[in-house]
Image 1 (tube, helix red, strand yellow):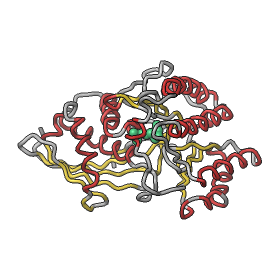
Image 2 (cartoon, rainbow, N blue to C red):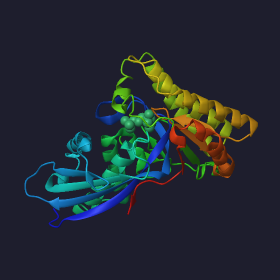
Image 3 (cartoon, protein in one colour):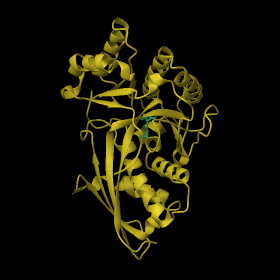
Image 4 (cartoon, rainbow, N blue to C red):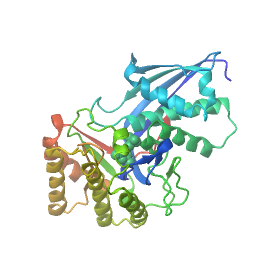
Length: 346
Ligand code: PMV
């Protein structure tokens, strides 16, 4: 046990799934494998202060941009409870956790992935001080595993620009327990891939992801959907190697619409797209055809649209977004992001 107090600051990015995680078993084990691109600019930056104490307990204060933020407490409390057996040293410290996001507050961009990844990177930095005798791979896997216990998709925000989570049968070393870097060489067209996030609806999420995953229990199409995700991961693996953008676009858009189809066909059912979501999708399709640019969309569990395109087409696509698509965004807001690498010590 350390006798001094200290602190770390880590940033961790959000990520965008191409093959979607939707449905889980106990212990944050995914019902199907998923694959995501890590982002670069949409990040959470978290400072963890730790101070040794004598009695063993979970004890922390929470700040958001330097101000007390009690609304995060239940989620963080649960996180510390879930990790206490894996990280018994966390019971020896009193923590102050101060968090900020680089993207606008309540933009409808989920901060749970970046937030849980940034916190977990900090916890593992503390573990390295308490127990410095493991390999770098051990610490990275464990950081991802802790992030998973905080929020499933967060395990894909620790390391790598393309990350697989969930046993696939087709990608070596993939695991249900943590996210792993895509282990094969990727075609140059995917290097520095772009993701512009169009903010269509910044309102509170209609369906929390916890409720969303539960909707897959007893879902009439669950078995087929989980099988399809396996097939899609295996196909995407080949597409990422070959650089076939036509196949990439078809697979990615179909995954996004399938995620929403699952929500529309569960009980209770939800429509999370807004009229502007559909308007934007239609315009992307039109632009793809008329300008002959390989741009496509994906969606999270909400109304916002992620526009994906190769770096080579950055100028054309970004001016299309700024001049045409932004009209259909709430307050004209969008964020140009791109592939990033993962959690970083600051
Ligand atoms: O990590 P969670 O429990 O917030 O679930 C995220 C689910 C989706 O964003 C809809 C899909 C995904 O794979 O990220």
